[in-house]
Image 1: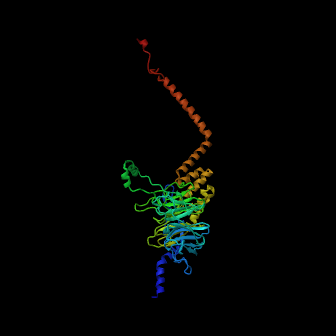
Image 2: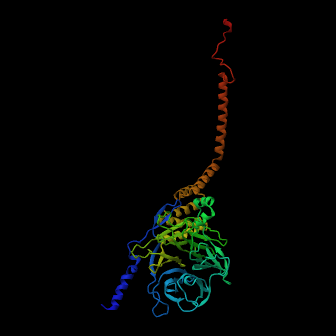
Length: 499
């Protein structure tokens, strides 16, 4: 058999499973679900479907862009023109694709000060490309053409602990140019760096050490020597960071019980309230491993959990919208992952998710169901409950169990004063407070409409009660029970004359 033919057959055997078009599949390889207000899981129709992948034969052979395929893609970034930037770690480069997925450029491989070594993170603004150059323990900065500009290394300051290792893995940049850097094993939080001097500005968004009663008791009774022998507990480390168009900073964390996703304002307050994200329950040998988060134009957050291989999507307030995807168990199907490492969203709402073990980037598009939910929820979050009503009705037409649709309708009915309808929808949404408020409003309206009847009835009952009490007392008096020691006039006869 000719050598070229053997190569073609081997390539087909390796890539063949990935080339199956999603439309030809009888059903998706995963199920989509959500949680209601009581954290009960219910299944819904698909919100996102896989449409293709990127990673094989990506770089044309006639350009000096390096290997044609991806090797350990660890981070994705989509700019304002929907260009995709990939931190291709094992190939030591950043790859840029246009909005159609066509190759544009690759940089970081050339020898010199701009040469990368295992880059794990990338951030792009209008002028520069920032790279978390992990192997070189620095942040490398390039212009948009790929020319090296400068670097940021470990800040030279006594404010950092001696054992602090500056090994950047992810980063983002705010409107002032300040860099927020997630470092390897960075339990201190994000390292904030001044763009002009490269000086250390402090830590941001650190996780808290979970409270443990046993540890507290140990501190009360152990000696100093005994405490030194105890293993020092560190907070969970920040695994990724991104910033939205409003300047809010989002992080993902691992090895934490709550607050896997955080949304910080400029003052450093977590607007999501340190709640539980991801699966409501996990087995003993499992862990929530959130690796990345992306935010669309409406503030909806999509995050990937490498432990389960699932994507979790939340509204701007942290309310659950959908969860889909799953772990690849040897089926090699689009939508299933070996180890999802990054997620990004384009202007059309398409999701791009990299799998660093299969060296592919899966592309997902929204379904009609997801578009309806997003539109209804957008209006709902803006307080335009009446405008969102018709969209929620369409959502319920597709899935009568989707609780957020019932909640949206309940808010609309409440705003319009339709208390009976509001009570019904709040009950279906399992919103106890909303149901109680609607019930109270209904009682108030009833009292207002029947005030004169209620007052008149009350006065009549009061008069009848007073008359009944007076009659009862009069009857007791006549029976001789009105005074202490009194005898009944009818029950005793006068016997004084018979003597």
